[in-house]
Length: 210
Image (cartoon, rainbow, N blue to C red; front, side, top):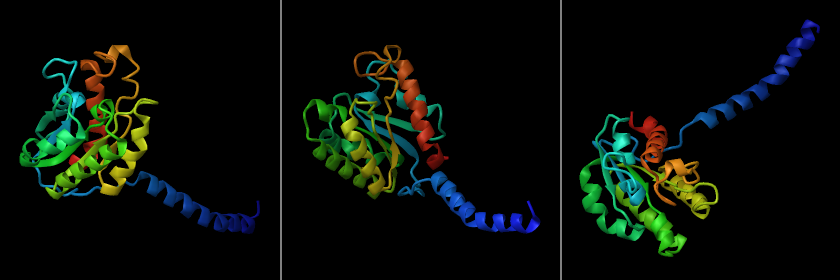
């Protein structure tokens, strides 16, 4: 190829290279998270039986495992059987007074079992997120779906997380809910499953707390 033709080819590729670079940068950018400068001193895991650690021995729940992976104190504020409505009733004493830097919010299963409309679940979660963010803490919203399991909540939770500028942790139970070796019953993980959950959550929040 002649030198002049080669120079022309390089010039013609410059706009394309710029577009590709912009796409790569945009794809790697972290989403904007509210209260990223939080001065809180703890991580509060706020949820139902999956946060509580149902199906595993004391110290094998995911908050206990997560505590070994982070440099902040981790508080288990999970209550077996809790709905989003019940969570709103206890959020002040179990979360807001704990000076959280980050609150990991995990609810949905009991709302579904008690036939609470999905829209009501999302509205309650929005209130929970607002209360936490008004206190100056970051929020990570957990989606416990896996495949078809709770799939109807996935898009709504992601949309809510984006709207509220919260960290979104999707498909938390993926490859756990279908693996008998990682479950204590039809729904709840065992110690091995909670270890996987803790690692997934740590991977999702590490960039925001370290």
